[in-house]
Image 1 (cartoon, rainbow, N blue to C red):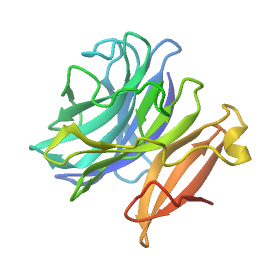
Image 2: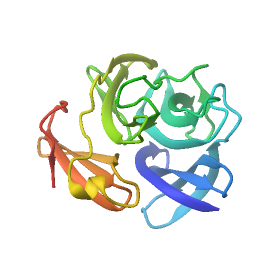
Image 3: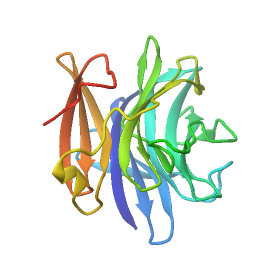
Image 4: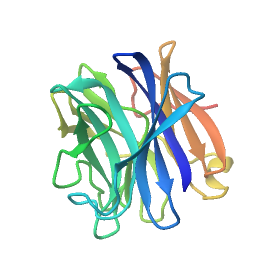
Length: 230
């Protein structure tokens, strides 16, 4: 089975710090969201499939891209993920868990669906782990339009109910502009997978045209302007 690592989520357990890596397992037929755990980021224990393909409430196709909120809400962990609906649209769902291993879908429909005519009209996919803020749960996500141009948006969910959307970008906060973001293995793609808050800034770590890795920065708090590529 070929695997594609998506991103790393640190969480605490009774035995100390653990790193939780959600990744896509692909067997040349189906993609499914999987999990591995590490104590040192060098040695990883595979825990298997978190969300099997073809067996969801609305996500009757593949599952991918898990973004886990490390703080518990309502006594549970919450994860945003990508699923494929019956019309082949890739949209975002949300699930909860008490142990980070066994997950239950929290909705009967996508929690963040595609929007016709906008930058996320074809794909809505979570990016880095969401952050709990006083205003709500901030999630950076990746959207693609009907021409499969990938850009980045921000969604904010209720900090007491991770299923409730409070805010969503009407326009992208980040998109392909530089030549190496427009030309590559898959053209016109910026895909944010990592985010760090450092020295009063947010740093985006992202894929460019599925060929390069770049970093962009914005002043904190994160706002939809002022990103500067490095």
